Image (cartoon, rainbow, N blue to C red; front, side):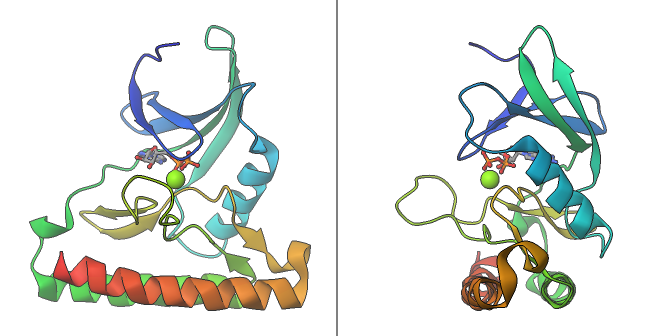
Length: 172
Ligand SMILES: Nc1ncnc2c1ncn2[C@@H]1O[C@H](COP(=O)(O)OP(=O)(O)O)[C@@H](O)[C@H]1O
Ligand SMILES: [Mg+2]
């Protein structure tokens, strides 16, 4: 099936443009991921700070026969558009916000795409004219759901991936 206004296809889902300010992540019959849980995790992060893209609503498109997670539309730009000094400032803000999410019991878990999956390694991290934003909380975890032990392990892994991202973001 060809989707009109398709923006991009991620590891699991297609994302289409709805308006100038909104996009919809499509969950069709063959998607394994759970739209309700993704929406809840997004709202949780939205309540903590502005890093994760804003959740708007859940909807259903009869023509596409797809459940839709409607959210803020982000317009990513290439890192190379900005001087490394500016990137360093944005990076510092980004890392602060990530730590804030961790402290409050949210871990993203999909900062870096596993190397056996093709595609850009950090395509869930988007640079905008106002700094770095995060999308795709599909496999994110909340401390309240997974418990101390798993949560701590996830955060450790994420901190390593963030170190890799730092290098990539500045040297690109
Ligand atoms: N809020 C958004 N604004 C603009 N583009 C988006 C947005 N959310 C996702 N995308 C685009 O769609 C792609 C797939 O979305 P994503 O949530 O990462 O799905 P997947 O779980 O399949 O990886 C992203 O890599 C990105 O290019
Ligand atoms: Mg993704």
